[in-house]
Amino acid sequence: MSQALEPLQSFLSNLVHTPLFGLLLTLVIYQLSLWFYDFCGRRAFVHPVAVSSATIAMVLKFSGVSYGNYVDANQLIYFLLGPTTVALAVPLYREFHHIRKLALPVVVTVVIGGVFAAASAVTIAWLMGANEQTLLSLAPKSVTTPIAIGIASNIGALPTLTTGVVVFTGVIGVLLSPVVFFLLQLRDPRLQGIVLGLNAHGVGTARSFEINPTTGAFATLAMGLTGTFTALTLPYLVTLF
Image 1 (tube, rainbow, N blue to C red):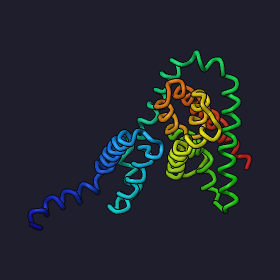
Image 2 (cartoon, rainbow, N blue to C red):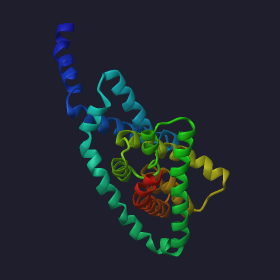
Image 3 (spheres, rainbow, N blue to C red):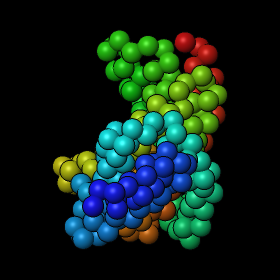
Image 4 (cartoon, rainbow, N blue to C red):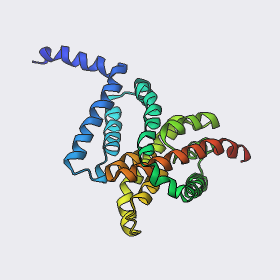
């Protein structure tokens, strides 16, 4: 029996150490997480990004595949993050008649929120004794992943750490959003979208479209403005410290 299984074991062992394994792992685990998400009635606490991230981390741990090799295998997905983010301009255009009326409040909110998000993360990490590179990696935490990676590379941070922090921030933002909306009695879909887009960027924006098209449009706007504002200002602010 064991001899009959040897070819299969050899195949699986070789597959684990090929670039194809990392890409297949991402696609398969995310699809399974998405089915589980639908099965649970699309509850925020079982968001597919949160479930798939934890599952993939465990698989990498027990399979012996390094994180660096896994990232290299998923370069195609990293490349597609940019076009996907740009494609969000379509729903934004469809809801532009709603957005135009609140342009000034949204811009002011994004500027204040973007500054506070970066400053609070860096300050807390500094008080806890984080080194300079860790502080730089935390600064773009509230920006969508493609922009955050570019900022991290520009300011001398660790792109991999920044990516992990960005995803973690988005997942936590989505998980806590129902509680925050309930406690603050925040029922306006436009305000919910701004909160999710500003604090949970791409993951929050995806969640926003599940709530309401208007919520998704405002989340897209907040995410895009936050990313633009951070990309234009953070590299210069870093040089001051």
